[in-house]
Image (cartoon, rainbow, N blue to C red):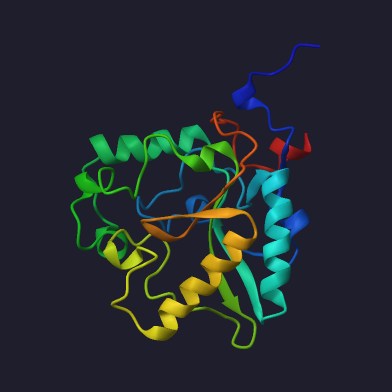
Length: 216
């Protein structure tokens, strides 16, 4: 039997919710509420996919945070290369800036790449990177991190200190739990983490974000 191209092989990918049933999913790139303003290519279902190893690691993180009164809320996990191409074309060729007030109010659209907020090759496409936050079970609301997900600006840097003590401590709570769980943070985005020992460090996958990708 002929093996599929490595980039199209989803055999080691899973639905994250199967491993972390308590996780809240708000897959932004399946919606129109994102920095582009349209559903992103390759997002066919509003689900989080990731490698099996990543899901197992997140299960441990979720368990640690759950006993402290928090649930994980995920915005993005595996991101196909078709989605990354959509980002790149938008950044280079598309003059549309209708979402600027919400996601990049203080920087020029043309600077989103050089400042590190959008990548022409994304670690998300390797299957072991996640964008997430915390939900406070006592209030049923997202924890205030000082800036929303995908706000491109210095305020979203994890070590930014011109926010309240409570907001900074919330970032550190998430960051430290993720580090203990085997993930590495990203210097430009408090919500972005990649497995330190990711199973596919050199493979950028292209299959769509869809239930059938991992259930076929």
